Amino acid sequence: MWDALQFEFMRNALLAGVLVSISCGIIGSLVVANRLVFLSGGIAHAAFGGIGLALYLGFSPTLGAALFSVAVSMIMGGVSLKSKHRADTIIGVLWAVGMALGIILIDLTPGYNVDPMSYLFGSILSVSKADSWFTAALDVVIFLIILAFYREFLAMSYDEEFAFVVGVPVRFLYFLLLCMTALSIVMIIRVVGLILVIALLTIPPYIAEKYTNSLWKMMVLSSLLGILFTFVGLWLSYSYDFTSGATIILVAGVAFFLTQIIHSINGRTLQAHRR
Amino acid sequence: MGAPAIEVKGLQFSYNDTPILEEVTFSVEQGDFLGLLGPNGGGKTTLLKLLLGILKPCGGVIRVLGEVPHNAKHRVGYMPQNTDFNINFPISVLEIVLMGRLYGSRIWGRHSRKDHLKAEEVLKKVGMWEHRYTPIGYLSGGQRQRVFIGRALATDPEILFLDEPTASVDPEFETDLFDFLRELNKEVTILVVTHDIGVISRYVKSVACVNRTMIFHKGGEITPEMIDMAYGCPVDLVAHGLPHRVLPAHEEE
Image 1: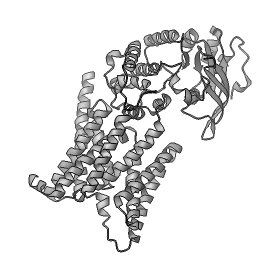
Image 2: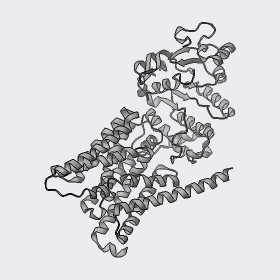
Image 3: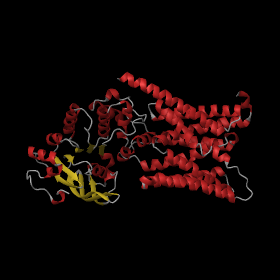
Image 4: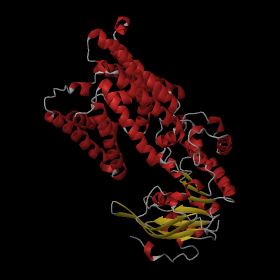
């Protein structure tokens, strides 16, 4: 492991892993609590349309994905509020259409031999300094927003209806959350790829929820778990020459199943105690 | 002050073309204690959500304390019917009750000392103070209901809306709660949705029955025969004092 650290790309990758895990833990907790997992999956895949568009028009794919996924998240959010009962269908459509658009636009891009695989499965080892700066800035912005509206986000996440009744601007917070989710997803795509975004966004919070008694602790623990998973994943992928994104997700997946099993055993003994 | 607590004229609401409420007209004076009866699916909860601004009416006018429903937000307290959603959410009893103190809070804000004192006061009132740090998922249904009543009270409301507040609490707490509400009613207008006719007869000042439309009955006593009728068909409860005067809209469908 230590000899790997002398490579700059490895240090960059670890830094990117830490920075992405922070926003992932904070936003992922809110995504899980507000049941936005499917919507987030939609944003991640539709973002590919933005990547294709950026390559076709010749600007930064990260910028393209960011603009596109924010726009798509607003549409999906609007649809979710307007026609609740078919929102999942429409999100599913946007999900697929966004991806298809991206692939066609890459086809149309003349003489550009881009490897879509790096966007589908991530390439944390090729994360640039600029990407890390952008992620760090995003972390700071997200942290400040959550700090400013923590009680409001807590109220909305637990009981949106009551939050609305007492005058919390739930609609504004909802779209603000979608916006932050979209931007976080763009950075997560760099690390694990758009196909695997959902796992890194949801597994840490899901585990953390079981072991914490407040939302902010859930966020902190999720971030720490995210860092742990990316580090272990990176180490395994370096040692055994596996695809980094997939290895990170498998590490998270193993942790997920282990905690599930431990929790169900504990749950049983706990119930026995109560009786 | 001066404006009626609730004023509703010609309210219509339908859900996917299915009419839920039609031509609902009534007004509630400040200081009233209104019991809202009606069969399941009759539209009681829908009416409550319209009064709170959670749902938007398809027609008609609603005024709460003289304002469009959601504009009166910081002046109303609300306890929903279900308390078992989000049961695994990592949130403590105290945090839930403090949700009632969110209005007018500054951003970056923490809850003020006043908010915490209020939370302590209402949690002691509903007997949940010793559970203040307990996660909501560890509580029984009855305990959760107390917490949610506490949260509604924490808003310091001028009108308190309670949707089936005693659905799963023990009878002892039910009596305590209504004694407490009666005391509170000296300052606060209360609207309570309930199935419990006994409660209606002992505590409320007026009764309304909702089943697609509403029949409102202001003031007066509730006689034993009304209660009998209410058990048979809650709709008949309106025929207060005049047992056979059932309004046309409420004829059996």
